[in-house]
Image 1 (cartoon, helix red, strand yellow):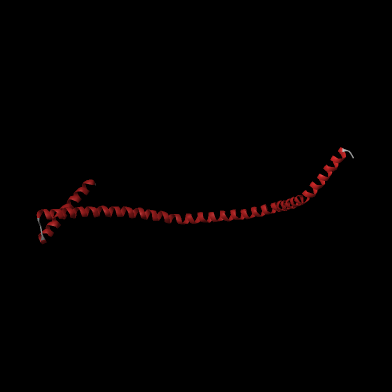
Image 2 (cartoon, one colour; image 1 turned 60 degrees about the vertical axis):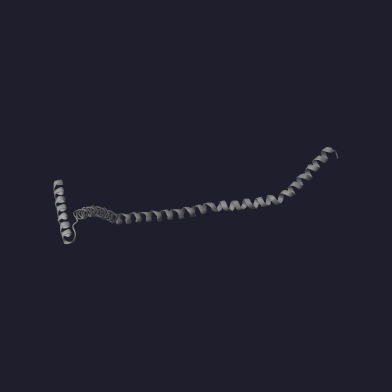
Length: 147
């Protein structure tokens, strides 16, 4: 046997050893690929099921949104009424507040007038009423001139 034959023999033995060593990992790889194949075989069915469920959910969502829109249309006038009531209440409150401030200012002026003139007792009350009537007449004149 010459050197060429010995080299071929060594390469053959190395190839057999390599094959024996790789048998187990190749079998595991085969099992893994079989699992992947089974998964991919089931994939179209899973996608179809998912598509059906998604379609059902979308239809249900569309129906729910339509129902909510109808209910909002029914309730919307009430919100407008509540808004109008709130606006009217605000205007009334502002009006009452203005009148209250005006009366407070009048009574403050009358109180100052009473203290300045040193009016007391019944005479003070009568002068206070007189002062308020004068203020009322002045307010009528001012409001009459505005019209």
